[in-house]
Image 1: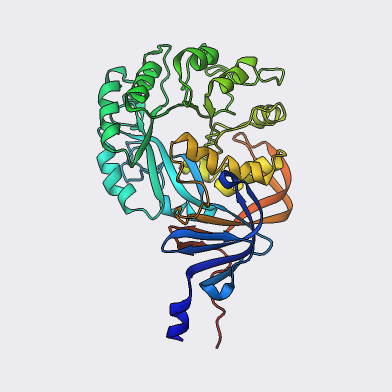
Image 2: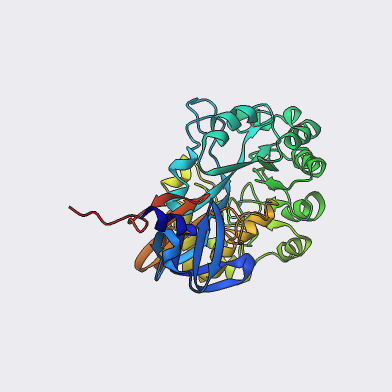
Length: 400
């Protein structure tokens, strides 16, 4: 038996699944082989005798590991620090793999002053790949007045710091600022330019609201990201869809300029009244993301698999949903080595079943949309190792 095992070429062979790999234009029933933590082969028929572990994925979808580019995973036990080392952030490995996610991007929970602790405490100790947007505020999302402190929004220092951690930091984040000044936006944009990384803007709030058109056409660059794209706070934040259900024309102009749009569902930033007419008119997300934290995981968002299912319920194809949850996000954060099943890439793989039935999906105010299909993460592989197996498809039958 040892000689036979030595002859096997692959650590894992996934057989008979419907592969969706947008980067490589694959949308067909194919087999996938993994060895030494990397994708080793994608082919119509790989001999199962070549695999030490053979997984039957018939009637399931095999995709690149999901990339969620908007989460809060700087988990800690300090009640007075909000999403920065606090209990409203969540531990990455507890919420990633069970939804098919292999890469989380923390959206600004830490700033330059607090990132080293985030890295040592969370990033370096997680099986999930954790990347980060660095908050323009030096402390990060510690809550309250700290996040309104323009004096702590140092573009040059933030950019210099980001450049010292190029493997971990993929962008700059502006969040939660509630004044009328453009200075915070411009500081974040300057940091992004200096570090040559994108800026993600959560437009905060002000009364009356600041102009989205001015934000997109005068303050952000091609490649920068507007998050919470389907939020609706008419008194404090301008919405992309007007009161008549029409997408404002400058939104499409911004898309042509290269502005990227991110879902960032969260506990308060996704309304059917915005998402449904937007999608019908072609205003689609570049990135489907969760804004995962304790306020979203137990409400309408739940997890990435449920969120992806919401977009199926709004008429998007599973191919498009996968594209906007893998390959597009990888490009937005300038990590083209991720989000695909190319030979030689890290073996980050998700296997989903598409369950038929009667399902209900909630927005953030409890309004319900009914759907007839739901994505369920059956198996998640991170760097060639099984990290989640819902129904034991990678297991061996027990025999008494």
